Length: 393
Ligand code: PLP
Image 1 (tube, rainbow, N blue to C red):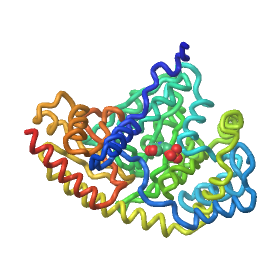
Image 2 (image 1 turned 120 degrees about the vertical axis):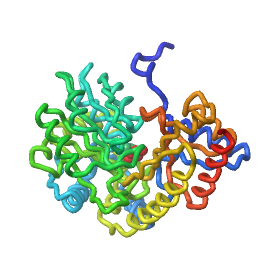
Image 3 (image 1 turned 90 degrees about the vertical axis):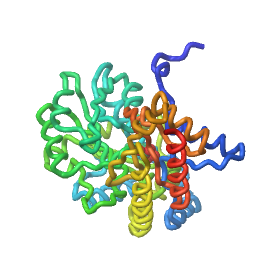
């Protein structure tokens, strides 16, 4: 059977691949520390679980409108008003099967063959693949590590062509944890307005910010940018709800309507019970969210300090999300490794520490460590990485 062209070049998620290998080693009885995870290690808070149970008991287990139940859309517009001071109507909101499917559907309704989407690197692994699946062309723009992995307005301007349809801004970022300031977003926004480039603002890590700086959505900066932006967000990372699969998109109602039509023929609707769980998440207090954030902050401080002591490991300190993205090129070179990918492989084989190589994120000199695991495990992982580097000088 000859498969369709569109899947021939599809690369499986590097994050999932390393997680699978770490799991296999664990199953063989090895003491593996997995720092590959892209999800919080906390349980979904009880008040959310209770809401889901109630939804089941009340029989809310049937098809819902393709774009989500009105109660949840109301809670999302209220959230956007509360947190971003932005006003949306329910027609401008679609609830999706995770933020991932919001992005997937968005590219499906936006792109014709050959249309370009600018993807700043390091990027989240699914962006280029999703764009290609929509027959679009990802145009990778590499952000400098010295600029905290953020692209400049000049870089953006240079990448724009007559075929450019959109640019993705992911702040705070997976994999770097970096966050654009309001001034940086304003400058990027001006370029987008000048060239009529749609902004896809992936704000899934919005609630996980560890500095004094406040998270700003590019849509907040001006009326014009509000109209130029589609916000992507969801409960996966903020409320430790990765398995529930609830995300949303907020933006221009023509785009949202097309996305809802598309969803009506693909998912039909996000799981009804999960929608009522997400409703509880958005209407409940942020106390649990803050608790999780505080735990992440403490881990970030500890792990960052331990990593920067290791020779050949350089690590800018991120502002948000739950990842560190150190540059380990020098450590790999002085250890005689061909590249960082083989350094990562040897680290897993010898010290049983699973990291994700940066090559999957368009940044081959770096590795991604997730600190969505206990402090003890993080300290032990840092100790093992240090020993590994010392053994390969
Ligand atoms: N966007 C970014 C940057 C992510 O890191 C992720 C998940 O890893 C998603 C979107 C997808 O989130 P969800 O689990 O809600 O589909």
